Length: 177
Image (cartoon, rainbow, N blue to C red):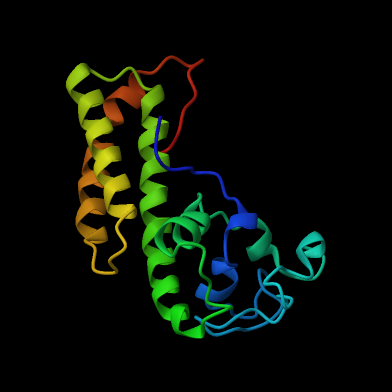
């Protein structure tokens, strides 16, 4: 069983998606907000006051956003439950790690999706090895991690799986890599 969860759990996060990213007024966002600033829709407890009406109020980008479990991993595992809302000095390091861990969790999601393919034993071993390496990197507390390097390795591996995807029976779930 994996040490990570790829399911978002907003109850164990510190509203990192609401703080980390910049919003620009568009079809997806009703307001503009700079990166690394709390969204004005957050209440004093760090919960979204308009969560049930996001799309109706023009926040489609928020409604469709998925962190793949990066938010709770950063908040609970890497920062021990501490939050930027309680200590503003954590805002920048939490935002940076959230961006990195989200990207790493996207890789883990793709590697898990590849498990449905009829991989050869060496390719299955490589898939598992890459997933373990990505998980180890995501669990590091340091901000100085080589996300681009591991991203390239996983991308190259996933590209090598195209023949498996092309040969998969029509009844097998198909995913785009």
